[in-house]
Amino acid sequence: MKNSYDLVVIGGGPGGYEAAIRAAQLGFSTACIEKRIHKGEPALGGTCLNVGCIPSKALLDSSHRYEATRHELAEHGISTGEVAIDVAKMLERKDSIVKGLTAGVAGLLKGNGVDWLQGWGTLLDGKGAEKQVKFTAHDGTETTITAKYVILAAGSVPINIPVAPIDDEYIVDSTGALEFKEAPKRLGVIGAGVIGLELGSVWRRLGSEVVVYEAMPEFLAAADKDIAKEAGKLLKKQGLDIRVDTKVTKAEVVNGEVVVTTDVKGETKVEVFDKLIVCVGRRAYSEKLLGENSGITLTERGLVEVDEQCKTNLDGVYAIGDLVRGPMLAHKAMEEGMMAVERIHGEKAQVNYDTIISVIYTHPEIAWVGLSEQQAKDKGYEVKTGSFSLSANGRALAQGEGQGLIKVVADAKTDRLLGLHMVGVGAGDIVHQGMIALEFVSSVEDLQLMTFAHPTVSEAVHEAALSADGRAIHAIQRKKR
Ligand code: FAD
Ligand code: NAI
Image 1 (tube, rainbow, N blue to C red):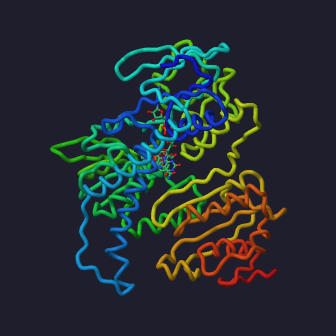
Image 2 (cartoon, rainbow, N blue to C red):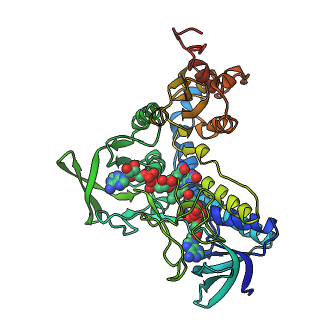
């Protein structure tokens, strides 16, 4: 085993493995240290590939097909007879997708000449020109490695709350909620955030009665208010019982059931579930990552402190992804990994944090980029908005997906687009049009003047832009221009 590299990455999640590949492309001798064992095997890909983005999307897809087959085919004149589910097979499919992808990442590292060191990495000392990293293999063997540069990419883990201790059987976190052997009859979820809505939707579609407890008074506070309102309406109609302003004060397992006590504006309620998912956010994972003399500064919240370019307080040491400020998203981690390496290489790479897209993969999807109406107002813009309902979009209706809306937020003085928001079919893809428009500093007029193909759901972007000036064609608008 080599014990000296140009660059060592600690953490092989989307941030870390992309950084390692980019480093190798740029000619650095590179090692990526990853300690994860997934289902008995060492695995790259981090939270995202093993227990996050990919397995959740596999189950979202399977459960959506089940629901659509049961409830949506009849109106097309297609009859199916009785539709049954085999949860074990769904989980098997999910696992084989995960395995294929993580093996693919291992192949990419190998093909690019990156050494994957299977075990724990600890930054012992990052202060001098030769950084010291301790590598602890799974068998306990320790080696000290030196490197000119180190990228910390250790990611995050779920937050645990003392009122609902995880036992991995009845009370689970997001990882446990990807492994239920069958749909629990009664499923409680603490936290109506991204995981609560996605995994709550999976098990509801597969037959669970789902109650989602949210401590905040507002549903989906991070989203534009109009989008959150529409999304809340659609999800509730599907059967997700979302209770805002509700604090869980106790959850305990009694005779094989989870007894949940809540406080709703001072009133105590007790409900019983077969399983409870706790998904109240994630925290940076820096245990075992930093030795006593690493020299790295952490923030009050335990994140590694970095500047806009992901440089820590130490020269030659960068930190990226869930370990640092900003949204905990795989695509943000990936871009930061590439930026860090390119900066080390002397280039002027920069992530545009103003255009990081958010997507919630419910059906329909909820997605946005840029500023919400409220955020734009708070920043002092004189705001104009335009929106368009998918109930008047021909393609969405032809697909049986005429629900939801698209909204544009713009600066009324300059016409500059500030944000694009959507709840509706394919929102996660369509919102990329907004990202590209924002990157190119487009005006609303730019979107109005472009020719969108007919019939597409994207036409609703065009109509939302037209509507910002009272010019939507497939909606009655009195304002004229
Ligand atoms: P991670 O993916 O967490 O990877 C860090 C890796 O470092 C881990 O594998 C860990 O084992 C390893 N590590 C930690 N410490 C050490 C050490 N000392 N030595 C060696 N190795 C170490 N994001 C999206 O953008 N889209 C989604 O659809 C999405 N869905 C999600 C669904 C779920 C259920 C969850 C839980 C998360 C989801 N996320 C999603 C978030 C996404 O998974 C994370 O933002 C992303 O994985 C962060 O990447 P990262 O590289 O920073 O960290
Ligand atoms: P989250 O931050 O999205 O949502 C947590 C929710 O729990 C919040 O609404 C919060 O108000 C609520 N909450 C906190 N404490 C509570 C309590 N004691 N009782 C009731 N409610 C409480 O966190 P989540 O869903 O755990 O996801 C973690 C992160 O993973 C996300 O922030 C996101 O970055 C990432 N993720 C991204 C996905 C995507 O991009 N599609 C999918 C899943 C996760």
